[in-house]
Length: 261
Image: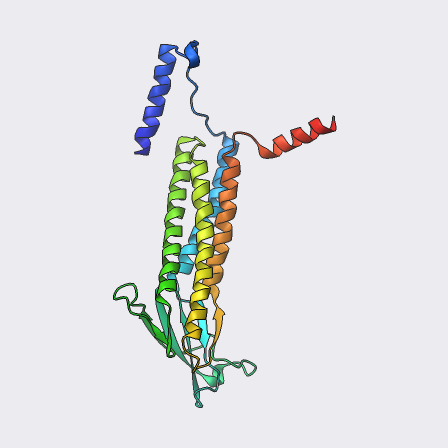
């Protein structure tokens, strides 16, 4: 599709040159679409590298189940073991740890990196629509689904933005930089919004049953996704600046010189 579009643009340019027709009936050559200079291509590649880092962090965060850790009090079970859970968008894991392995000053069970037995299950609200129950507390299906939808749609926009950048670099034309900038900006905002919705879903889970006290901590998967959102927004701003038909910094300097004189 893109190759046909570019071929059509080149053919129209050649037809304009052959006919000698100009805009408004005046003779002249049809202007070809502007092409990126080597310097501009280097800047686009650098901004694309920044965006790719955000995409990779997003994939890492979405694929792991360490978005939040739920910990019972260390001596809640009155035995040598204690229980904690951690989950992400797709599955949850309940871990049984030895109290003797936990730091003495820590009051809750954890962290999840300690050795112990783990039992992981995938969430069923994506298939059969059933809510999950973790330590007698029920997940909020609506919020969990909303978090997953926002995250997946954000990932889709990242892919679309990457395709636009690759096409722009392969053809050496800058007009696809603006769509790419919009895709990365919106994807960064959506991924940050998914973290906010997920946080509300965790609070809803804790409030569903007050019989078992639990402490919660947002874990490293959320840190990856949050960092990815900020990086994607930064990459989108870079692409937006590079898509401008003028150098914003040089224009500011020129206006400052004119105002001084």
